[in-house]
Length: 279
Ligand code: KIV
Image (cartoon, rainbow, N blue to C red; front, side, top):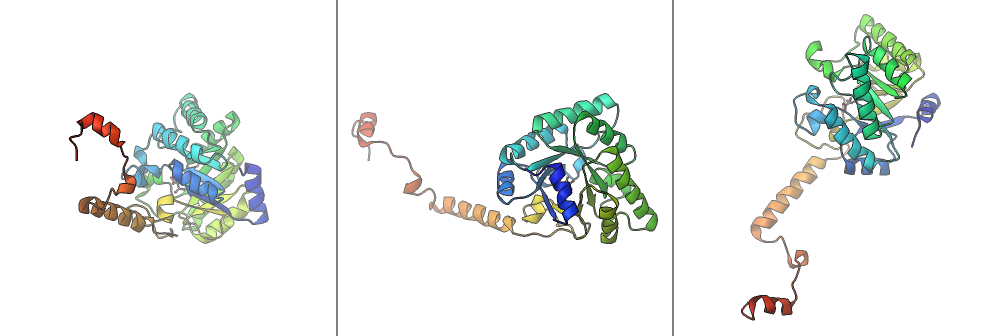
């Protein structure tokens, strides 16, 4: 498993960090076999797996349930789990209870929180408690309804300056890594230089220290619209749809199950059962 120190060294040496989301055991197994550096159980779970319209419906229970499955499938991959909407604000006791529970029960290596400003205290609190924190800046899906949808962030000089300051403050507060979402690539280039911790981009251009994609986008699995910044590297949806259609046809035509899929009772047992009156 890559440690935080090794991930920082990868940044320093210019080796790109590969991160992707995962929400279940088989995906985690495949990702670990493919030598992915970091797995993220993102709260995008709410949309791509659970069918909610946004991430705000995701609960800590959901994160724990899926986080545990991913950990079981990828015991040797650095695992980040999202703290969902509303769980990392409020009293210190409440934040700590939620965070410790998610961290302990999932066996995560770090927790991710969206935002800066008032979230800086949370980053500091969790880090001091011994929980490594990944910050998330730029487009914050948990705040999409406040900022008016899923829009590119940091496009003006002022907004870019604020993001640079936020990134530095997240690092000072103890964040071990920063995910930046939907920002101009030139700003990403500045950000990677401004901090010593890895900057992982999604919709943030090639200049980031690493990239993260949502699993369902990268293999094209699901009926959701692919964001402009994403690329599908396979077409799982077509393979799955074809498989289900073939199964449906085979059952209806009687081609499945075949004799190779059957279990057979011995003749003498049948005789005992039917007294020789069976076909
Ligand atoms: O929830 C998620 O999947 C994320 C990624 C978009 C980085 O936060």
